Length: 246
Length: 241
Image (cartoon, rainbow over all chains, first blue to last red):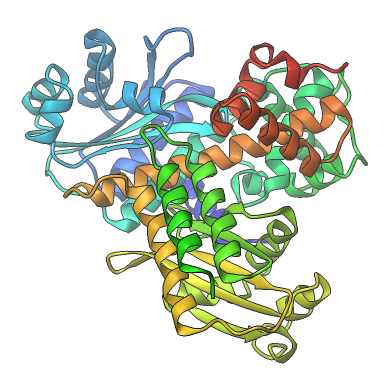
């Protein structure tokens, strides 16, 4: 079933496809994430977009992609200072939307907010890259003008965050292969069975949630089936993924 | 109509779940349970919109309703969808007479043993952010007073999601909605883990997890997250005997 979300993700993937490759762009998943940041900067529009990976044991993270040097600096600054919207979004597992860095934002992040303003940024919106308990990092959007995201811009941001999460999950399973796989993208659509199946695959294969998601997607990809159909079979007990194959 | 003294208790009970750091899924479940009780409806379910403007299943008073809510979402048809699109309540719809309005949903609802349905919008300012759905096993009518009481419960659900009324409320609402939706996903993942671990169905897995959370006074969402990321924290729940 081609729903709105699937269609939006397909559009986002096309926008990323259309984004020119950087002169010294990185290969593989990281290169595609860089183009994702640039594409989102263009469509919103925003001053810049950055993407950082974080881990559970420490909130020290690594910035893996950004639309430009300034956004990359703003990402890294958060880890230097140990505070900022990206770190809060990861820790709280929810978006952190700060339309006014000059007032409310400065009370929230006394070190980070003034530094961001010096870079000409006055609003920041951070979206966690997560699917349930699985999380990888945060997508940050920077804007020169204070003010809320419009509903349209919000939808775009969440869609690009979903696409980025899919890329990161797939990147684990098939490193270097950055083809977009649109028929897989209903993975994030409203199919509770997909999430239940992710939990089941964890137990069947004895792996963590991120790996289970990757294996489920890889299996669907290899069998050219939609992930929703595969999940349905797993939940119904008709299909068990093997430990040694995808 | 419900007795006034019981009604007061219901509102206190719902408000009581709105403590600091409350579990949003448990809160919404409590709203559905109490809605079913005050309206004399058999069951109630609650849907919220995501950032794509699509409704997502969040909570229900029992699992039979979960399937009917998912059916509406899958076929994009039914009282909840109408209520969400128009922003107005659907009241006293007789499922036996609703074949034209909802050709797919009406027979499905009858099959599940329900006679009538109602749906109430969750509203924040001009925006509809979700819907509260009631299913009755009798064709009994909701009176105007019942309608007002249930709309109050729907409004409480919205207030609960907002937590604080500030100028940042649009941002806070988005943050809360996204967080609630992700909590629901975590619960589904945990249901999958427990279903496979114990060789039981996903509904039984949910009951197991909820009963464990209540008995040990843990937040349901916290338990679900631990089941997926760190199952050793709850060995009673995650190991087979």
